Length: 220
Image (cartoon, rainbow, N blue to C red; front, side, top):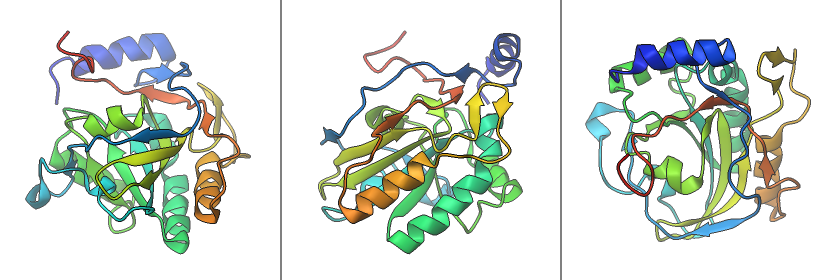
């Protein structure tokens, strides 16, 4: 666990009334984005830890991949786990690979495995650890939970078809609906499978800031 963890959580508690830093901050520019950079990450299984390109980006040209960036500490991400499980079932039916990606640079394998067991992700969803945060940065995620739909180019790159909220379970920080009324990531997956563009290629996510180890351009 990172040394500043307690201070970060207390700061977030003061700022948001939750044990995480919360965000409705504008982020990546909407629209389809082509990315040709291979990304380094690590699978959540200790025996499979690697510095090779992310398993999420390995595949044939035209393959579709869905990502949900999560954090075991984010209450909003944890509240959305049942929806992520539903999305995993839908993705399988559509022939789309879906991954839940732990975006924290400091989270360890034991914590990831325990979270998967406690939230019934184990055996249901492919879980990855992106401790290098290169997948997170390249896709453009800044919040958990946040979803993305990618079309692979077969060379370690991708076209980003959707980035943003998973659904509208939360109308705002502290304002949770009984059930979501809009299913943005699901709709983007369905559109991608049919060959159509997402009706909304970007939808503002509401959740917890992803803490990056250092700015993308260098050390802070």
